[in-house]
Image (cartoon, rainbow, N blue to C red; front, side):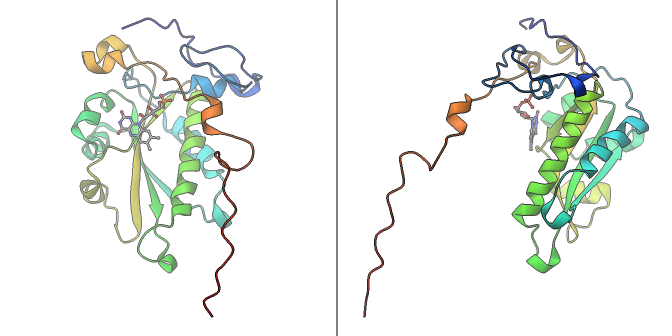
Length: 225
Ligand SMILES: Cc1cc2nc3c(=O)[nH]c(=O)nc-3n(C[C@H](O)[C@H](O)[C@H](O)COP(=O)(O)O)c2cc1C
């Protein structure tokens, strides 16, 4: 495992200015708050408990996320007690259970099904729930915690484990929360990947104007009369 010599997560980033320095393999292409570079998803956790009060702060951050028509379609369930944590962990894929066990808390993010729009949550509701997750993740970083989203679930099982009605809610992801631990305590394959990941360059994901190559103007409508 290569040592990255990363600074520890700070809890005072709210006031720090734009980052121009790299954070490990993360190099900003434009000035941005260090918060965005320093948040990443660890799999090594130190096993220390996460207080209910800290969790409330995370969910409070999520509560203030914007949503379409302010519908706030998200719902969180969380576990900190060992028995509850075991139950919540059992909904993760086996590969994810391996590392998530070391975290202090685990939550699930559900999205309310909009009955007026049919049996499925609208794409916009899922988008809203994603915004709430990101607020939570950034708030975790500000508290010196890490939040790791987990989509690798046994979803059918989660409904039963958590007593969630599939008619009312869709289970989106689990969120594993804790303090970063030692990579060497992970199985070797995971230890190798335990580092902040890079991103595609900014120029690959954003451009001014229409999509390149430029769109051809649509052909003139034909008349069939
Ligand atoms: C919706 C979602 C689902 C994810 N599912 C998993 C998962 O099942 N297992 C896992 O180890 N990481 C999972 N991740 C973490 C991603 O692999 C990680 O966010 C991505 O590689 C970028 O790395 P970073 O979060 O460290 O910046 C998931 C992330 C998101 C946002």
